Amino acid sequence: MSDLRGLYPAIEPYAKGHLDVGDGHSVYWERSGTPGAKPAVFLHGGPGGGFSPDHRRLFDPERYDVLLFDQRGCGQSVPRASLEANTTWHLVADIERLREMVGVEKWQVFGGSWGSTLALAYAEKHPDRVSELIVRGVYTLTRPELDWFYQFGVSEMFPDKWERFVAPIPPDERHEMMAAYYRRLTSDDRSIRMEAAKAWSTWEGGVITLLPDPELDAAFSAEDYAEAFARIECHYFVHGGWLDDNQLIRDAHRLGEIPGVIVHGRYDMPCPAKYAWALYKAWPGAEFHLVEGAGHAYSEPGILDRLIRATDRFAGK
Image (cartoon, rainbow, N blue to C red; front, side, top):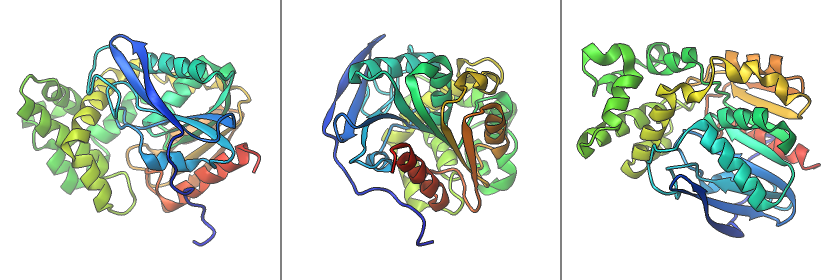
């Protein structure tokens, strides 16, 4: 285990601000590392998760100039938990606005979980803007993937946690769990919204690591986090991410020879490994690492090791 790579030391951003992206949205961004070094953008999960200070530590600060941003409606972006003008393609356009703000022709794109979905959508639309692509916990947002997590599949592996997830939903609505939750997460009654938000968020937080992580559970169940996370995530998922069926695998040929690394945990519950494997088969420029003894979270030791090795290698280290 001593050979496994870990996060770089904690670092503060050297610049930060808000960018008006239109539609009434202002996204929070920050840059860390060395100004003018290798450009990269970090895409957080959820949707609606926001980024954390530890995400800065995935990149060697001497070799990278990393932009991190909170996607529309979450983290320090405003208006908080807003669903208006908040779709995959709005976010893809926001990434381009941020690239133009940074002033680079190309940058490395790094995304995990929903961030992998967004990274693929962006890279397939703007392949000429991507120097390398690193994706972890691959999610292609097809209906079978959504059903696996919110209808039947993970429910069989975590019956205790599933029971708590379905509890706010009457039995006659449980045949469409996402739709039932969406009605509650968009309710005018704050108490209804918050009950649903905490149950939705806690379900995800409780199944993303191979072994239980009480700190992660606590973070996902916190009210201020749960509302934006659950509302935005459910909003994206009931709309299928505004993607055609199987679009991200179908269009993977557009990635061409972009150098890429796919990292996926063997026991990733939210995101079954077959979709990461399908991406690998469809993308000639990618290498694939299926990490044994790992779940979904980037903090799983074997997954983190592969991610750090990928950012180091692409920085010429």
